[in-house]
Length: 318
Image (cartoon, rainbow, N blue to C red; front, side, top):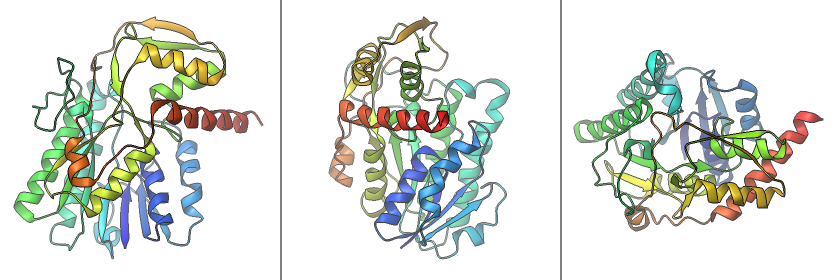
C-alpha cells in the first residue's frame, strides 16, 4: 500500500513513517518546516526514512501544494500535520493555528473526497476535552470544552473530518492523543525539557504546584494505534489513545531524577492559561474497535527517552 503522512518531519509523523516502511509499505511524506522549533531537529527526524527506497519526501504547505500530485496513487492518509503548543496559541499567533490546523485539514479533506481511500486517520488531541472534574477516565462521549485556542482548532478539524464522512463518504477516523512522549519528542515538550535540564544541571520551570495529573502515552503505542486505525475501527468515529496510566507531575520528576541518576533543580512558577489540571483516557472503545493495547509503562518509556536525549547531547557537544 502507499500512504501519505502529513507532518512527516515531526515527532509522531517521522516515527510513523518509519513503521510503515518497515512493514513494507510505500510512504510519501509532506512537511512545510514551520518555525515553531528548529529545522535541524526535523531534518534529523527524517534521516532514516530518506535513506529508504520506498520513501518520497515533499517539502510544501498543505494550504498551497498541488493536491492531485500529492495524492497520486495514495491508498490512505495519516494526517499528523498541525501547529502544536497550547501556551503559544493565544493572541495574534492564533491565525497560524487556524491556518495549519483548520484550513489545511479542510483543503486536504476536500482533495480526498471521491478518491477510493482505505482510511483518513486524523491526529486529534486530548486538549479538546478541557478541564474535566472528577477522577474518572474521560470517555469519547464527554462534551468537549477546550481551554485553549489550540484545543479549539483540533476540535474544529475533528468536526470537519466527521462532516466529510457524513456528506461525502470520506472514511475518516479521529484519534485523540493523550500527552505523547518518547524519542524525538519536540524540544518544547515537558519531558524533553525536564530531562535535558537534569542532564545539563539546569533549573526546570514547573508551571503550577506539580500536583497536576496526566495520562502519558509512549510514541510506539501512538504509532500502533494509527496503524490499527487504517485497517480497523468505524469511519466517522473518534477514539481516545492513552497510555493507561495517570501520573502526578511531582512523582514523575522524582522518577526522572532516579532514572537519570542526577538531582533536579526545580523552579515552581505560576500556572499558565490553557493548562488543564488532569487528563485520563478511557480507552475501552479503542481496545474494542482497534485492538489497541498500550505496551509501554512510564518507567520503560522514560528510560528510552533519557537514553535518546543523552545521545542527542553527546552529538551536540562532539
